[in-house]
Length: 410
Image 1 (cartoon, rainbow, N blue to C red):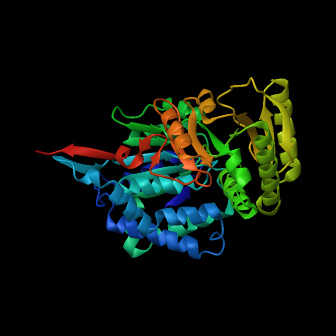
Image 2: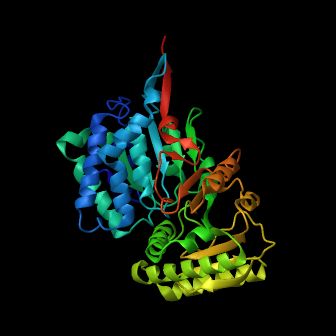
Image 3: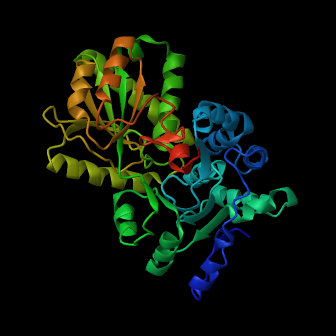
């Protein structure tokens, strides 16, 4: 069983028995056909499982790890395999510290690493107890005992444990790289666990994301297109309760006051209707959470008023507020700000800005947005509806390249 919980006693002994630490032989090459077949089989099992195959995040995951997509990724990175005097090699043993707020991320992190031929141990949060994740654990275990996939038992090892310095320190020392997804607090914690001198750290710090909507475009499209757009926005924001680093916290509306009011009220109403039918949450707790956030924001002179209801709340930013790193309480609580043109967005960009999703921007507006990504800040610019779509280029890293080693041969 490669998805396991460490028992309270003898953790160090158990760690030494994890298959990832059994020898230094690497039989799997980068983009090995066996690896692609393994993840393609997992994708088919996810799509065939009645308990999870209707969940958008699970469908998205399955489509990302299917054979056609993985081969496409290989083609996009073909240059890595054709460098003169360079042989691509696995980086080695990778320790993944996986996030609890986006519970499918561990599979993406794992897939990218195994695709490069690395052996992996993933720390899974004890809070990741959702039924759909337990099903994924079950499917992984079923695959790993099949004869054709047994070799991956030393490449795929998932463990769950609470805060334990000795375990984290041991894994940090034994690994050739650490992928730390947990944000600033987790990064600072794991930096206290000194890794080996050549251990490579790939870190994902706290980030904020935003959406940009051209009001005249939104107001001009037909009702069915507005509904379709609202559904895409809903998926970006509500899938992980707005806790994903790429989910929008602030929405910038481009247009004059009349266009802004029209767009804002229509979007808030549509999101509320969608949420009532699709958003599984305790509305009383959500109302209390948002009320507390609004009180705090009002007392801090951050917002002036709100539009919407308990399902979809837009808190209007004070016109003089230029806080670049606002992060809401989640659950459909958005900061909203009117801009007269795309150029005004430049003052809102900080080094913590990760993803900007957009709707209705023309070619000139998009070019202006791309220009703002020069230097620090803005790692992703994608259409609304694609905020949560994982890509092997994330937070400025090409993860495939970061998780490989180049051997010079002449």
